[in-house]
Structures are given as structure tokens and as C-alpha cells.
Amino acid sequence: MKIAVPNDNGKINQHFGQSKEFVICDVEGQKMSGQKTVSAQTLQHNHSGLADLLKNENVESVILGGIGPYALEALEQKGFNVITGAAGDIKEAVEAFARGELVSRRVVCNHHGHGHDHGHGHHHG
Image (tube, rainbow, N blue to C red; front, side, top):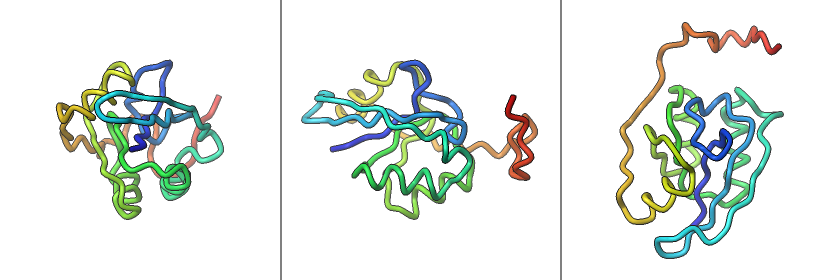
């Protein structure tokens, strides 16, 4: 099974759409058997592009913190099992998921007042 997690220095990035890279984890049984990192920098805020990137990696599940409703819809339309509300170390979260201990909290970010509205007039510094 392949699981994708937005990476923030080995921790789960809490803002899916702002993730610069994803860790694609291979899971066998209840253990992570391997991983690779894929860049998403050219796709930031391109919801269907991120979904396509992960689909091309044969990912089945996506573990993340918060996600906007459009990005969540893009992932679900591609058939991903989306686990929201996760935090902390990527390997620990992936293995908790493999053991059936990580359950989605349905954390959807509808608060676009903190600098990432969808007008896409971003101020990338």
C-alpha cells in the first residue's frame, strides 16, 4: 500500500495546499518499508494537479493535517482515502494508520482569511 503525506521537515505539513513536497510511503503489514520524496512546488494551489501527482505515484491513501474543501474534493474525486487531522512525525502517523489507529477527523479549512484565499493573488516572498 502506498500512502502520501505532505512533508514539513519530517512532520505532517498542516496546510496541504502549501506543501512543497510529499513523502510517498510504502507500507507492508503494519510497518513502513520504504519512502521517497516527490516535489510539488510547481503544483502548489493546483488542487487537481496535486491529486494527479499522487495518483501517478499509485498512492491509495493521503494522511494530512488541514485541507481546504476544494483540495479535499479533488482528492476524493480521484478515489483517495483521505485522513485529515493528523499531526506529528510522518513515520509514526503512517504506521498508526497501518495499525488502524489513525482515524480521519474531517478537518476541513474554510477559513481563508489568513493569507491563502483562492483569488490566487499570492504574495510569495
